[in-house]
Image (cartoon, rainbow, N blue to C red; front, side, top):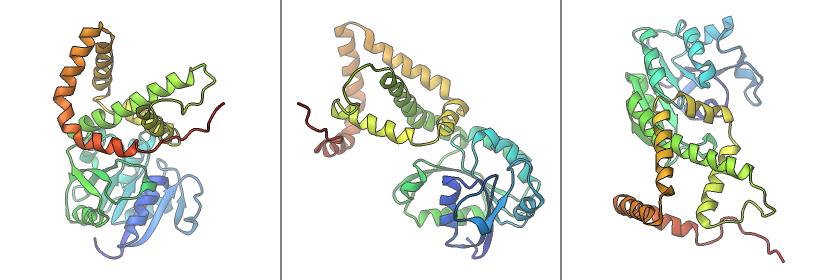
Length: 291
């Protein structure tokens, strides 16, 4: 990436700030556009609505080599339409949405020379880049896009290149379905009527409880976006329901079903089983002794 590149990040949330840390290593000034004050970036913050941009925000975008759209779906489309009028001809636009089919269609409205990248870090930003998977969708390639990907590779992140439809289908199965299961567990636990602590349960439940606890510290808007914007969501949730229904037969039917499932998948999951043994070596949630 060219040293001294000018960057504007629209949306100074966790993802936008994390990308700013990365871009600082090879960029010039980084400006943020956000509708609210954000601690630590006062001198570089332009207070502006992302949809109804101020003249200062428009000027920053027009002078930027890289523009990052780090916004939720509820405003991203309208913000894109406002910002794309300002892009200079060889700029790179990066969007960070959790679903890519719809953003892919926006490319037709971009100026001809603008490069366009979809980025989906499959982890919470505060966990860091190293050895983490990042889904990348190159809607429009070019030298700035390739330079940015090279910058990402230097963090030792694992880049997974997909097209928009493949991204949404894969993430529906691996992210959306996982979230749906955990959110369903949350509903069961919320309605539970017992005096026992939530931590009372077998080790596999503890893993799910840890994942659920992590989810519930995040933004509900993010999880709603994943469940509602992915075009493969209805099909995947119906598959989950069908899989659960197969556990409601008689004993022999359920046993035959499980044997069939295990024979297909178990050999591929041996490394995961070994990891699980390591995780279960000590209690995940140690409990105080109760008399």
